[in-house]
Image 1 (cartoon, rainbow, N blue to C red):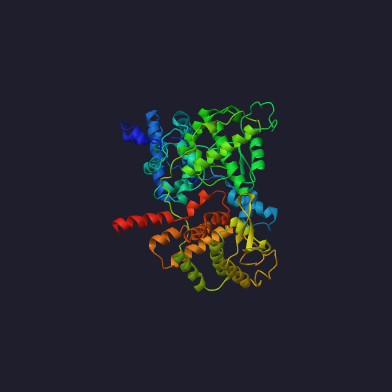
Image 2 (image 1 turned 90 degrees about the horizontal axis):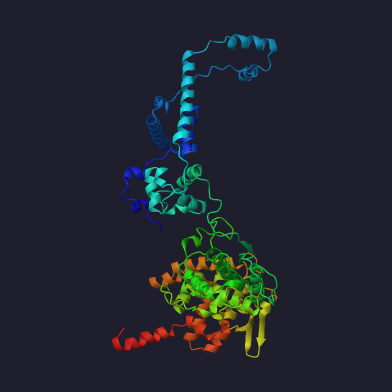
Length: 591
C-alpha cells in the first residue's frame, strides 16, 4: 500500500494538505447560476452534489474561494461573484405564441391582430433598473471568465484528493488507499464495488463521487492497460508473444507463440479441464514475459528468466491481480485472482515447463531453462490438513433430513446423489456423463463403465447401496428400474424432466444449497457443522475413498475404483495415520 500523504508530509501544515483547488468546473458552475439556472441542478451537474443542504454549503465554499482569488488579484468587482442578479423578462410574445397561449385558433386574423395590438402593442420604454441589472450580470460573467483563465487549475492525476473533495470525504479516501485523483480514477475505472472500504459510502453516494470525478479526470480507457491485447478462444486464454527467428528443422514451422500454445494444447490435452489449465498457466507466463521481459521470446529464455518467474509467483504484484471478476480483455481484468498457494505455484511451473519441453521435442526451442531450477514451493501454512469427507454419522444425519422433508423431485435427487456418490466415488463430470447404457455385466459382477480423467476408461462396481439408490431414484422418475429404463436415460436428471441431464453449475449449486440446509438442521457438533458447511459434490468422492481405506480396502483396489494414476494420491483420503498418532500418544499420556 502506498505511503499516506499524511505520513509523507508531516511537516506540511494542515491547511496546505486540504487547500481546496479551483478548477474549470467551479467557474462553469458560477456562470450557469449567473445565467439564471437553478442552483441545485448546477450543483448536481458541475459539483457532483445531489442533496440540497450539501449544495448550499458547496455554493458558499465556491463563492468564498473565487471571491478570495479575485481580491488577491485586485479585482474591484469581487463583490459581484455569487451575487444573484435577476433580470426582468421584457420580451413580448410573437403573434403565433400569442394565439397559442390564449387559444385563439378560431378567431379571424383581424380579430387576433386587434387584440394583440391592444394587449401587447404598447411597447414600454426600457426599464433603467433592468438594464443596470443586465449590465451587472454581464460584468459578473466576464469577471468569471477572466478569473478562470488566470487562476483555474487543470486537475492532475497526481493531485491529492483533499484538493478537490471536501475534507471529510478526502480523509476517508486517503485511509482507504486512494491518496491521489489518479489512484481513485484507476480504481473507479476498474469497476466493481470499489467503495466497500469507505465508511458510510454506499452505492448511491459512490455514483455521485464517480460522476464528479468524471468532471475532473476522464475515465481510464482501460483500468489495467498494462495487460493487453489478449483474446479468448473458447475457454482458453491466448496471449500473443514476441516474434523470434525459428530454428531450422522446427517441426512446427513458421508459427507465432500463440499458435505454438494452441498446437501444444491440441496435441497433449485430453479434456476441457486440462485444456483450460494449460491455457491459463501458459497464458499467465506469456503475460509476465511480455511485460517483465520485453522483447524476450521463448527461444531466448534463460535460467535467470526462470528464476525471476518463480520469484514472481511467490509474491504477485497488486497490478497483476484482477480488481473484479472479468474476462480477458474486459475492463478490470488481470491474469491472477489473488496470491497463489504453494500447490498452485508448483502447478504453474510444471505446466510451463511441460510446454517448453514439448517445444524442445518439436525442435522449436533449443532448451528448457525450467529444467535447471527447483520447483519445490514448501508447505502451505494455511492448509488445515483436513480430510474433505463426510463421516458415517454425519451422512446418516444428512440422509434423515432429506427423508423427513416433503417429497419432491429435488429431494429425491439429493437423496440419490448422497447415497450413490458415497458408494461409487465418481467425479461430478463422470456422474453427469453417465447413462444407463454404460452399465455392463462383468464376470466379477455389475459395473458402470466410466470415461474418466485423462481419457481413461475404468469400471466402477455397482454395489448394493448404489443399486438400491439408483432403482429408487428411477422409480420416482417413473422409469421403473435400471433393467427396464431406456439405455439413453441419464443417471442424473433434471427435476423437471426425467430424461434431461443437468449441467455442472446446476449440480454444484444444487448440492451446495441443499447440503447447507441439511447441515443447519442436523444435530451435529458445532465444529463438525462448521466443516460441513464447506462441503461440495467433490466431498462425496472423497467420502467414498475414505470409507474404503478406513474399512481396510486394498490400496490398489481403491486406486483403480477412483481412477487415480498414482497411489500417492490416496493419502488425501485417509485419517488412519492421524488415528494411530492419537492412539499411541494416548497410551502414554492418556486422553
